Image (spheres, rainbow, N blue to C red):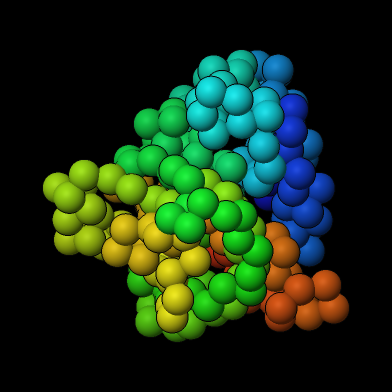
Length: 225
């Protein structure tokens, strides 16, 4: 049976259709999910896409965390379902306390859009197991509030437990502490990252296909489970 990957659309989501396309290209059945629903429609994994959920009012992701669908996502993540938060989705995961830390205004106070070089720090997650640790990949980045921050004790714990999954290589585009571009939870089923893997799935439309491995990885993790 084909695995089903659900992609949540919030008011203000921009990259939901791109994430659905990435899921399909990886071999999954893409399933649109709506922010106001209380039903995950039997999906096997969930993607929270990029954009500006609820207009980024109050704080990025702060309103989205209270949407009905997030009650279901939080419960499913706690039960082990793979969940990927991309850009605004990463912000929602932090606001929902599925991941630690916060994303704040870029250090330069400017919106950044660049094909970003990244180093894979951990392959021990449902979404990064297709990468080799230490490998460098190029994935588009576009954000105005992508600076990852956390208390020094939290950063130390993330480092020591291998929960930093991606790190910026070369210039740090937004001032994220310790060059952190993505992290995972303890179980490894929840991953948040600022770059957009759904925009790097086809050399024709992106800077190569380095992002496709994330969607392939989660399918393999579901089969293995």
